[in-house]
Image (cartoon, protein in one colour):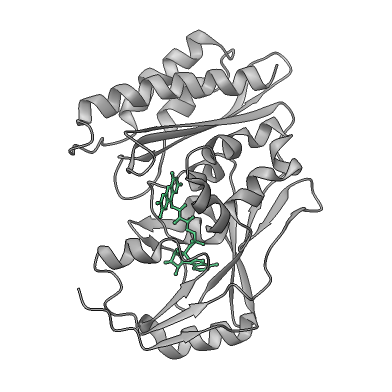
Amino acid sequence: MALNLEDYFLPASLQEASTLLQRYGDGAMVVAGGTFVHGLEVRGLLTETVALVDISRLGLRGISESGNGGVSLQALTTLAEVGAAPLISRNPAFGSIGDALQYPPRQILNVGTVGGCVAAAAPLYDLPAAFLALDGQVQASLAARQRAIPLNDFFVGLFESALQRGEIITAIELPAPAARSASAFLKLETNANDLSILNVAVRLTLDKDGKCADSRVILGGGVGETYVRATSAEAALRGQTAGEASFAAAAAAVVDDFEAVEDHRASAAYRRHIAQVYVRRTLGTALARLG
Ligand SMILES: Cc1cc2nc3c(=O)[nH]c(=O)nc-3n(C[C@H](O)[C@H](O)[C@H](O)COP(=O)(O)OP(=O)(O)OC[C@H]3O[C@@H](n4cnc5c(N)ncnc54)[C@H](O)[C@@H]3O)c2cc1C
C-alpha cells in the first residue's frame, strides 16, 4: 500500500494540535509514542493519512491522585511509568493494571503511552481491559471543550472509538475503588510478539461478610471487534460468597457472554474453554489479593 504522508507537525499546545487535526480532517493522524504506526501501515490503514500530528511535546505526562481518591493518568504517561507508580502498584484494587503490564516488550513499555494504548481501540491490547474492569473513563479535549467518556462507551469497533475528529485524549481517570476491592488480569498468547488469543480482566468488591457486592468481568483478545463485558458472569457472582463455588458458576456463565473467534491461533471451542479457566483464575487472584 502506498504511503501519502506529506507533513509532520510537533505542536506546542493542545489548541494548536486541535487546529491542525481539524484542518486536515481524515487526512491527519495523532502520534504519541508512535509504536502502533507501523501496525496501521501494514494493515493499509494509513493510505489516507497526509499529516502526522506528534503530540509528544504537549506535556500531559504524570500520574496523580484525584481529589476523591481516584487516580488520573495523563495521556502521554508511558506504560512503564504506570507500572512503576506506587499509587498503582501498592493498591490491590489496581492489581489488573500491574498484571496487564507484564506482557508488552520492554521497548514498548518505555515508549508506548496510556492515551495511545486506549485510543488505538484494539481489543487485543491488555491495559484497556484492565481499565474497563476499574470503570475507567477517558478525558478528551477538542479545542476549548473537554469531555469525559466512560470506557464502557468508548470502544465502538475494531480501531474505532467514540473520539470525534480532532479530539485528543488528555487523561485516563480511574475512580476511587470501593473498600475491599481487588482486580486481576490474565492473557493467553502463543508468544510475546503474537496477538492475544484471549484475555480476561476482573474486579471483585466484597461486602463485610465476604459476599460479592459488585464485580466486573471483561474479556478481550479473540472475542470480536471490541472488548466484552461479561454480564452473565457478573450476575452469577452477585450476592454470593466469594470462593470456589461462585467462581465456578461465573466461569460456567461466561460462555453466554461472547462469540468466540475461530482463527489459526485457536478454535472457538478452545477460546470458550480458556475463558472459563481464566475467569476462575483471575477471580481467585483478586480474592487472594484481598487477603
Ligand atoms: C512489538 C509490539 C508488541 C506489543 N505487545 C503488546 C502487548 O503485549 N500487550 C499490549 O497491550 N499491547 C502491545 N502492543 C501495543 C502497544 O501497547 C501499543 O502500540 C501502544 O500502547 C500504543 O501507544 P503509543 O503511544 O505508541 O500510540 P501511537 O502509536 O502513537 O498511537 C496509537 C493510536 O492512537 C492514536 N492516539 C495516540 N495518542 C492519542 C491521544 N492522546 N489522543 C487521541 N488519539 C491518540 C493514534 O492516532 C493512533 O491511531 C505491542 C506493540 C508492538 C509494536
